[in-house]
Amino acid sequence: MINTFLKEYRQYNEALEHAMHDGRVTTAEYARLAAGLLELLAKAEPEHVLYKSRLGECHHLDGYLRKAGEAYSQVLEQDPPLPVTEDDIRLMKRFCPVLLTQADEPFPLKDIVAIHHPELPIIGYHLFWEDDYDFPDDHEPCDHEEVWISYDPASESVTGVLCWFHSRVLSSESGVEEANQNGGRAVIRIEWGKHGSLLHGWEHMRVPLTGQTILEWLGDTYEQVKNGGRKPEHPLKKLWPSGFAGSWEQYTDFSVCVDPVERLDRKPLFFKTRWANAVMFIQAIHYNFHPKMEWPARFQA
Image (cartoon, rainbow, N blue to C red):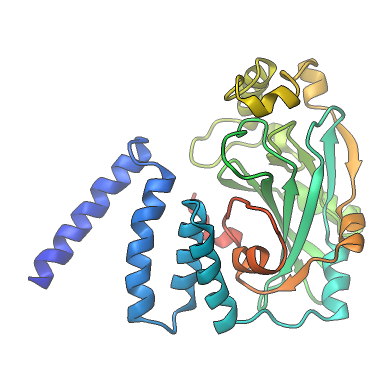
C-alpha cells in the first residue's frame, strides 16, 4: 500500500500546487496543512533542525504564536546562535544599508535586526516599519522587509545587494557599484506606505515571476494608494492618511535619509545564525511579525 499512498500523495501535491496558484488555497490554509507534515518529519528525523524551523514558520503564518514559539525555541536549543564578536558587529555596521524614503512616509522604522550568516559572508538586515498601508487587518503591527548584503571577506567589498520586494527577491549589479562607491553601504529606496525595497536601477528592472516592469508595478500601486489602497474603510485607517496625496513625481522621490545604524546603536540587535525567524521571534522582536524567507537562496524565481 505504501507505493500507492506515495503515488497518490504526489498527485495531491500537484493538485494543491494548482489550487495555490489559482488562489483557491490561501497561504494560511497551506501553512495549516504543511504544519502537520512537518510535525511528522520532525518526529521521524528529530536531528533535522530545518523541519522544526519550517514548522515554526507555518504556525507563525497561521497565527498560532505559542506553537510557533515552541518550535522556534527547539530550533535555537538544537542549533544555538553563535557568539557575536566585535568584528562581526563592525561588519554588520559597515555594510548596513542606507534607506531613502518618500517625504510623506506615514510609518516610521520601528526596529532593525542585523543577522550574519554563520558560514557565508552574507548579512540579512530585517527592517520593521510601523505598519503596511495595505494590510491594516493582518494582526501584525509592523511591516517586515529584508535586505541582504554579501561581501568579500578579504577586500571587504560588497559583492551582492538583494532585497525583498512583494514576495520576490531583487538583485542589482549597479546597486553593488553604488554600495562600494558609498563605503560599502547600499542605498535602498523605500516604497511609500508599503515599503517594497527598491535597488539602484529599479526604473529598468522587471519583477521576477511575472516579468512586469517595476515602473508598471509602482504605477499600478500609485493609483491604488491614491484612493485608499486595500481595505480603505478599515477602522485603523481612520488614523492613517486617506491616500497618497502627491503626484507621481513626488511618489517616486526618495529623498529622506533614514540611517538604520543609529537604531542599531540604540538597540543593538546583532545575531549570528541561519535561523533568522526563530532568533527574531524568541530574542529580538516582542510584537508579532510576518515570517519571511531567511536567506535569498531559498527564493525560487
